[in-house]
Image (cartoon, rainbow, N blue to C red; front, side):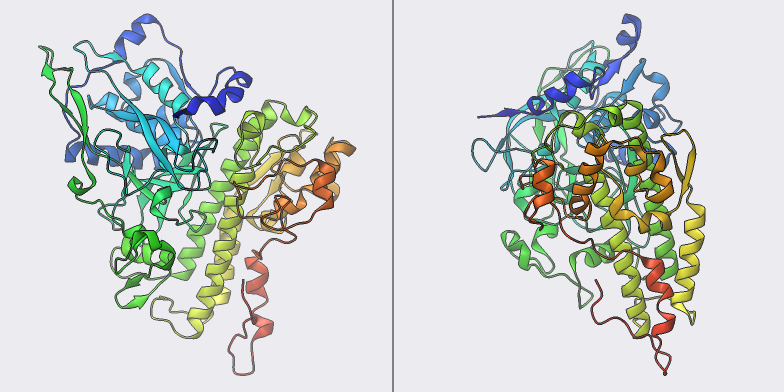
Length: 565
């Protein structure tokens, strides 16, 4: 039986009167100006290049919600819009942007409207173990006068979820085709507008691939805030049945249409390119290199220029303009800048929740069935998934710094560093970026509290994801800083019981987590218990770098700890 996506969101729609939608603010005259007339049979190479430029400009813009970005100077079509407000979450954004661009350029657009879990009946199509199958499709009608674009964009928002991306990369049905396909892993294929799908329930768009192979992404969230980051290990690589990580929109064309006197295409049907007809279609991200069986993706090897690599290093090597080289000081600076963007985005998300007054509401007696994948107030205003990705980013930065130190010790050729004190230079870069990152919040007494990346690292596992708690706890305050928090005994108890969940950086969407506070307190704790873990991984880069000097041996070499996380 097909499952229509809007069902699981109804509670959130009822709660938030504006909904996750594109809300028309205009008159009938404005609506008449917003006609979607399809004048082109297919997306040409120049259209695809214009799409890439469009996404790249929005990604680089200084805007913090999807609506701000669409209304910003980065959008060349903004002056042709009717009066609208754009509200989208992470899954909606790729579809709505692609549809918006198609509308403005007279291009055809089609989309999946329903999916069925390959797991069998009763499963959650957003987190199905064996992926989903397309069971219904729709497309923009082709008429001489065109159709109003705003209702179509609205329908997309009410239809799309991350289940759209959870499809088998090998599927090739000519009728119930998937909207996206799996691309090659190179600079010609992974371009702005490519989708990055995290099977833990998140979707982003690539907006830049740097010369060093780093992939910059941006995404929207249920609270409508926008974040920018780089693609890292938080995007899990899985088998082809789940569709991770990279996807691109499948080429489509209008067949059998007639052309009206005004140039609009009328009638006809949507035909999609098969996998074999797409020049950059590839199963490389599942097969490995050299190519193997995509179904045996766990044992795939990754060899580049004769060197065995892990997948993420291989990806950077493939996407680098030339040989992959690590410039450690620049790498650390770039990662800290990206994390600063993430923290600024988190600040906006917390402020949206505070603005709705959620912190003044008594919490429910139980957590949601799963804190990472739910609906209603928790979906809109909590931050467990966002915080887990943030923690993963800090851990990845810490691990990379440790790896740079190791590479420097053996004079690894990939490490491009000409100095004689890498730890000192990394520490200087850390301090410079820490000073440059301006983070603050307004406490419950109305006073501004200054933070920094270094401050956040020290309290990373204290940042509360719970929207029912005070702003001080949302930012992990303690001591005098937390004195202005107005939470009572009940919320304090919940905060303390959630410590183990805050320690966890892995998002477990398939684990029951609907516990009472008493059940959280009792334990047991562990990744598969749904109650969290006893300790989070090490992330304190400053302490690590400052501690290297005392660990220098008599010969001047750095004595690394026996086991580095």
